Image (cartoon, rainbow, N blue to C red; front, side, top):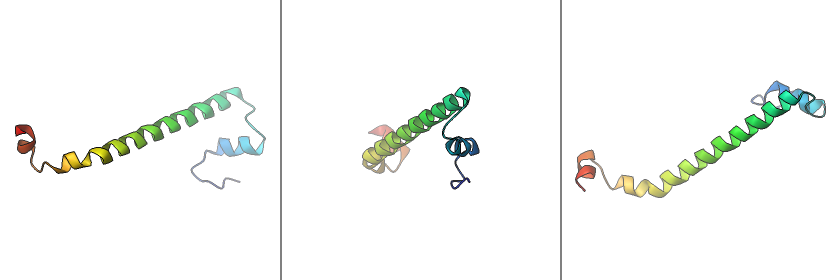
Length: 69
């Protein structure tokens, strides 16, 4: 029944029943999907930012050196 253990059981039941019968459940699912997408986008942005700027961080080995430059 639930092939993906991280997937909520409600989503599996809804899929088996051909969709969400309850508008509240549909709204919760859409909100959860939207928030998950947003979190993934922010995570990707931060990963890219750190990767692009890693060289700048590696140039300084000491906080005092960073402050004096």
